[in-house]
Length: 89
Image 1 (tube, rainbow, N blue to C red):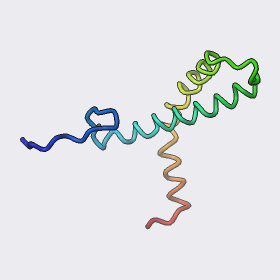
Image 2 (tube, one colour):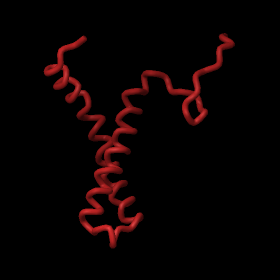
Image 3 (tube, one colour):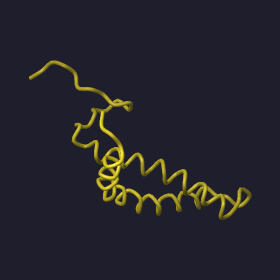
Image 4 (cartoon, helix red, strand yellow):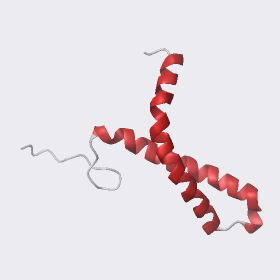
């Protein structure tokens, strides 16, 4: 066994193995994108005067539940499309 301490994340916990990057990246991407898009859509739909945090969070949760699995499904296709258009190093 090694006496080298395991790498720690920003939150202090142990880092996940690299094999989880294909899930972690779409997880965070889907959270950030759906937060922004649902906020804009909610504000556009009800206006700033009628905006309610609960309304936005409800819209965000519904959009995230759809976006995360969608990202997992389409990301391999997007990678192939990108590879078809971008010259490798």
